[in-house]
Length: 126
Image (cartoon, rainbow, N blue to C red; front, side, top):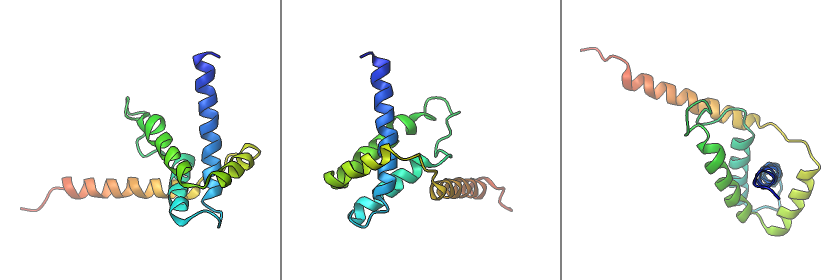
């Protein structure tokens, strides 16, 4: 198996796990702390807007290559193993959802950041 095939398989597993975590965040059998982490990771990963836009050189891809996979690993560890297997099986047969909550959260973060920058750099009356 080539390195490209290995990377492709890893990416497919990550996509499946994001959908599985989305399912876990909605299941009553999952502990509340695992739901919170799974929901946050899934919302961010499924959001069409990134915290750090990809057009920013190097760090734009940092969240896609480091932050999201680490969040997925943490959330998978928190969800009970038997349930995670069930969610993975379901996720493999299901289409990838779009997170409106993740989109709204990211828009809120960007608006808050813009307001903070305006407040910091707006000329103050003398």
